[in-house]
Amino acid sequence: MSELGLSADQRDLARMARAFFAEHTDLNALLAETVPDPLWTDQQLKAAGDLGLASLLAADGGGTHTDLAVVVEQLGHTGSALPVGTAALAVGLAEAAGISSAGLGECAAGLGLATVVAAEPGAPELSGKPSGDGGLVLSGRADFVPAGAAADYFLVLARTAEGGAVLAVLDAGFDGLTVTQRGVLDISRRFSSVELESVLVGAGDWVAGEQADAAFALARDAVAVHAAADALGASARLLEMTLEHVRTRAQFGRAVGSFQAVKHHCATMAADLELSRAVVLAAMRALDGEPDARAEAVSAAASFAGEACSRVASLALQLHGGMGFTWEQQVHVFLRRAKTDELLAGTPRWHRDRLLKTVEPAR
Image 1 (cartoon, rainbow, N blue to C red):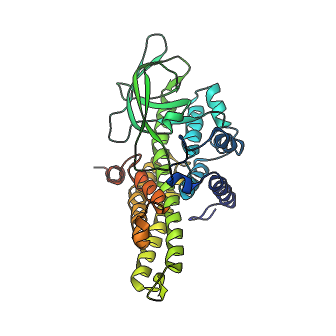
Image 2 (image 1 turned 30 degrees about the horizontal axis):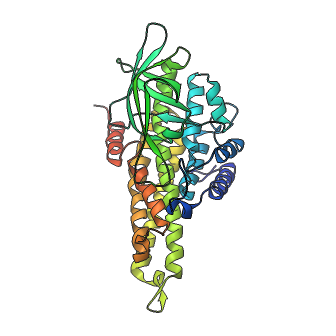
Image 3 (image 1 turned 180 degrees about the vertical axis):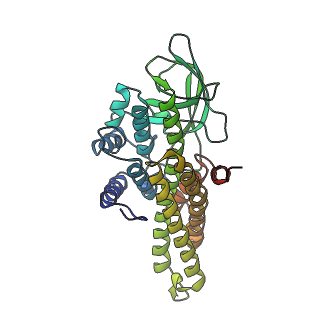
């Protein structure tokens, strides 16, 4: 693997995932609002499971966090609603933390859906209070849970009063669990709020200690990298669409792409995209590396790529001219997706603050 490139296997994985997601994504139907919730079908989820996409991080899946992030980038590029990233992450983290669940095994095969439930950075953490009988009582609210309304299982990231991390698995039927689908800017995916009111989790379905601490930190970083990778895919698609448009759209007897001002904007988009690709790839690899170096790489990617991909999206809209503002244009799908990704799993400002704390010399 070259320093700034993917391995041959990862490139093949990216091509396969892009082709699969594109086959199962109808952007015109999405814009026409004729795709029923949750924007995918059980058959499509099962097909993703058959390809091994939902089990990439499982012990028998053979994949890495870099591989999964490569797949997530293709979700952004195609505008796919399939929640493969959060499903694979929930399955892999639960297994790595030592939680055994038959339900998560079904999710790995695409026979159900698992998603990660965590508070947004800067918001109050979900609370986990061990009970006297070996159980755990969960309380709190997570505002943006991907595919929450359609999930069968939830991997909840919480903290005890002492600050220790706990991971718990619960199914959608638990008492005290309320899932409410939210209206968001992104029309290509669904997000929900999840509220936990003294939800009792039995012994064996949750873990604490060093394994939980490691899995909690990794989960937070992985979610941030997935948001950046998804935005990277969406902005790459926008650049492709924009270049095609300026090459074929004519004004004053010539292609609008021949005008110097348009060329400069396209060059700016390409520069932002390539710089984003470099930092996001470094963050992808950091997920599989040492925890001490991971925080810096992840926050560098989230802070830079979040804003850079949004700039690409904004310029794409402008360069499509007046027709870019019409609802029928697919530009809206990817612009809305990139702007949403910018604010998920920590805003650029939050990640810059974290980055400064990470690299600040010890005093």
